[in-house]
Length: 220
Image (cartoon, rainbow, N blue to C red; front, top):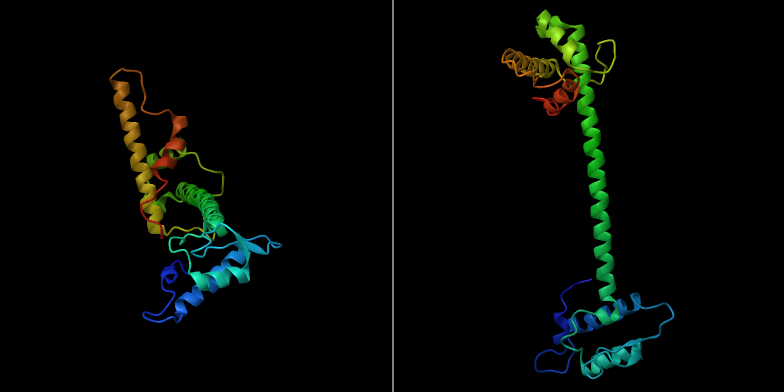
C-alpha cells in the first residue's frame, strides 16, 4: 500500500467537477484498508468525510458515497481510527523479533567459528609435535610445546578436512613458539631478580595460547 496520500486533496480536476483517477483509486484503497482492519462481523466504520470527521458509524457503501460527495478529511493522512496504529505496532514488534532472532543466529555462528578455529589450532599443534622436522623445530622448541600447550589427545595426524595449508600451519607454530619463548624468558628474568613472582603459571598456558592464536596469521 502506498504511503503517498496526497490524493486526499486532489478530488477534482482543476476547474471541473470531474473526479481525478488518483482520488477514485485512493478512496478504493481506503475502503479496502478499513475492511482488512475491522472485525469480520463489523458492517460499519467511522466515516472520514469532511462532514462526518470520523464521528458517526456508517456502512462501507455510505462511507464511500460521503467521501465522494463531501471529500476526504484533508488532515486524516494517518488512518489510526481505522487500524493503522495497530498495523504499525505489529510491524515494529515483528521487526524487534526478527532483530532478536538475527542476533541469536549471529551468536551461534560466532560460537561455531570459535570452535572451528580452536580445533584447527589443536590439530596443528598435535601435528607439529609428531612431525617437528616439517616445521624446522629444534628439540627444545618441541619440548616447549609439549610442556606448555595442552591440546586434545590424538595420533598427531591431520584429518582430511583440516582447513589450513602447510604454510599457514608453519606460521602459526612459529608464532606459538615465539610467544612461549618470550614468556619463559620473562619468567627467568623475574626469578633472577628474586621477586618470587612468575608471569604466568604453567596451568595458564593453555588458555593463554588460545587467546593469542584465536586469530591465526592467515587462514586459507
